[in-house]
Image (cartoon, each protein chain N blue to C red):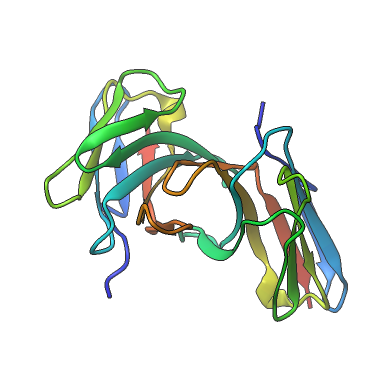
Length: 111
Length: 112
């Protein structure tokens, strides 16, 4: 059983569409991080959210941390083929502690 | 600044053999984390080392072990390899003062 549940597991959309990926847990985290991983590479950190209700924008990506710090979402506007990859959420309990990862959302954006 | 480096990139072993994977963290980072990623999906936590000591261990059998050296580099050892140990093994480092990991590109271990 995953401590962090991501949905959907797989998503295939056309270029220009919008999408939202969810990361849910029954546990409280001190921070929630989102990573993107491409084939043959390690995950790369996209953003860290630390405050309940926090919203961060990174170009076409919008990240939100739930008020209770148990869940998060990633919204991509006008998806592009370059957004294709595996998106992973990860929760941390205290700075420097190990991260617990969700199962990942594999996104494919078709041109 | 050099990132997290892992070696070897690929490793093929026979069932029952032992595998040794290596990781060099970013300069200044004292914490090293090992994760197993099977089937290209989520990461399963294996081991966390900081300042040369094992801080936490995931739900893996004792044949998964490791150590951290005085220069903060780390080694993951897997004994008595089984077919299901085939996976991408990722190492990450972090500074205790900050948030976020920096990952290496991983070692792809194949057990045949």
